[in-house]
Image (cartoon, rainbow, N blue to C red; front, side, top):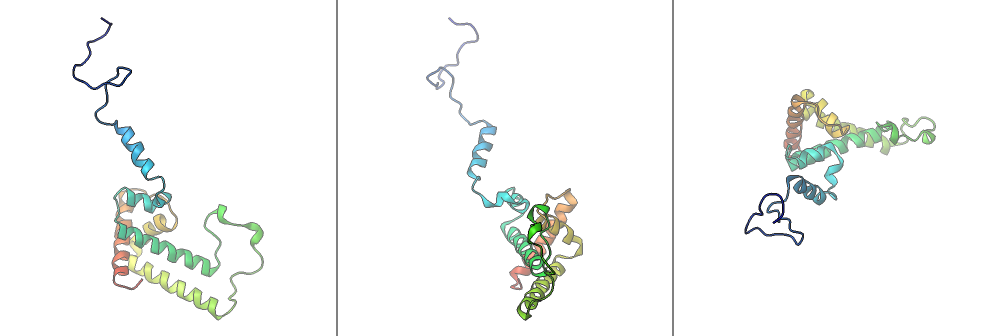
Length: 166
């Protein structure tokens, strides 16, 4: 007889003598869950992470994406440089890019500005900073108060979009 405690009876065993685990360990479950999400595009943004965590709904996620797209269209139409230093190409800046070239570009700018200001009016001034922080700047919310403001702004925006005005 070997040293140590006695073997448990009626337990399935591997060929090396170890008992078979009935349930996978919790950290293994998390690894399997994250491996299944590796091709998930929502993992690339804070808004997507909130959706995957179940803190916001899919409709609120889509409203946040619509706000981000409107903000990006406005930034592009106005000729502003990208917000991050990595996105700027110093060699590509020549002359005055903000001068309107023609009527179509001016119309594009006005349309982008109208859309963004309408969305920001719907969101409200109290929640606008939180929505900009998470949706446009892709930063994690800081604290419960900012999360509640973000949730309020996204719900207002989702309701406005559902009304057919987006």
